[in-house]
Length: 236
Image 1 (tube, rainbow, N blue to C red):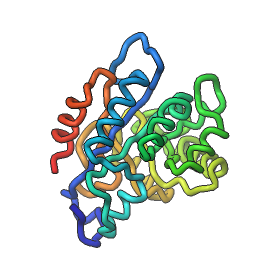
Image 2 (cartoon, rainbow, N blue to C red):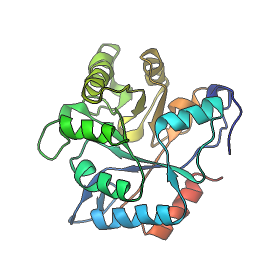
Image 3 (cartoon, rainbow, N blue to C red):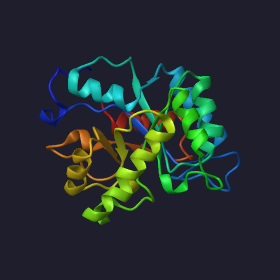
């Protein structure tokens, strides 16, 4: 599965690994859907991945694999969490750690410290426990609507804030709503972001590192259906 030590920009057809995206995780949600999953079903999915031999990886590992050919563990998967929900710390992280997994938390910084959202201390603890803390803008606008003057507010300042909280570099980005465009890629590269993750649209033929595919995992998916969809979305 490893690629040769050539920049991924020159390998437009590089093979992607499964990257899963979660949003709201609740004890007893009124309903489960694309953006909401119960804590019970979340653990069932994580356990199924563990039992099937999957190993979680973080963005830096994927970047090194795609650009340097650094080997990944067998059956790699990335588990990502968007929008800074407090339950990512209180419900999701303990489940991940129970199975020796680590996740990627894409933080929307406008929410930090607000009710039902992650506090600065919780974000710091996630980073200290081996999870990745990365950027999801200030307040979640589609990047296609961000003007040149707004990138400082939407990316520069959030990155600085997260780095101040965690003491670690923030080098990866998830597009709000999963939508990207070429202008956004230019701005991300200009600001030292190494790779970015999408949910919609096609992979860029010239900048695949900035359009890495993710899929949302609805709370209605069974463990078997999750793995079926992973195989369909990320054929090996």
